[in-house]
Image 1 (spheres, rainbow, N blue to C red):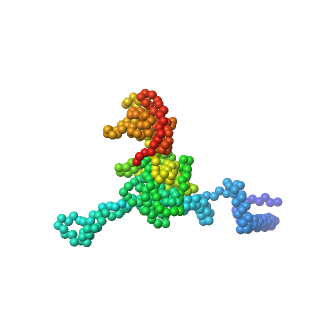
Image 2: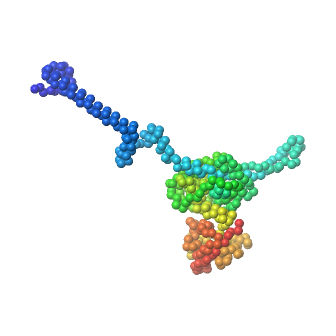
Image 3: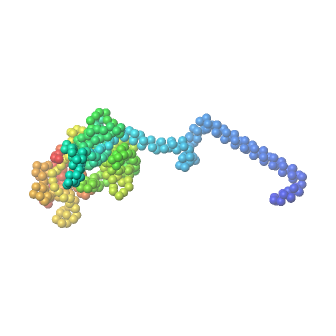
Length: 434
């Protein structure tokens, strides 16, 4: 018997004895036969597998196995994008809910156009009368004003009879005319039913029946991060513009407004859904298509920092208008200044919160308005209101905010610091005379 040594020199292999050569040929033939058998076996298995897949059985089996053992069948986003069918299906799943909301909501969202008679210059300065014979200067009946568009905004319909909600600042001009355009291009003359004296909310009306409407959702249980969809007349030019984002913050307080007009907004919603001028008064929707807010303001100098009034605030006001045709706002009838630690030290108060009743600078600026609910309850100047129904009045919970929670004819209990002692005083709220 020969001991074989592996060598890369072919001459030594060729010089091997005949018995060794015959043994090597037999081994090689056996190896080839075994490899061929293995190839045939594997081909048969894969052929059967693809046959099952083509018949639908394999697909069902794969789906069942992948559900039981998902870690064995993880695929990357890049892989799914290479399969157009899978990618399209995933897009449909992600976007179909938003698309449904938009398609159902847009018919109820309207554009508001503000027009007004504006002065028109009819003549050049012409001291020598050179242009007296021009046709436009020989028409004594020619109007000296013309109607021009001076503003735009958004609103949405809340009743089949054509009641529309928007921001007060969109329709604040009582001398202007308002036209509402629906998504199909129809124009309706509109009138303002009510403007809220405390909140940036107004209610309008157009004539007609069977208008598509939007419903209010639950703004008291919003979660930061949930989907938010804004629809509006962006820049007063691009009607029914849709933007999508999330709820970025809750319970925000800020002062909003333009030149000469400012208003404090409290407990409002922050969103990164793009809101632009012209979107004011439009709906902020959740993923089910419910109105969770009214778009009201944007942060200047920032990107995608927008704000909306919560639906809960708006719904209460619109219900009043539906029932009574107006907005009824309760009031106390006092003038006051907020109490803080600086005022406490200055006049040696016992408390550093609440509001102190004080008269204004003019003789007619009474501290307590005669005949008001506060007057009837016995409140006087220098009284400090500390609480309303147990709620502390301070910079985080102002008197106006707390009163807004109540309705006309509600009876409330005030905790008052009166001449060195604490007193509980009951007051029946009355309607503010606008």
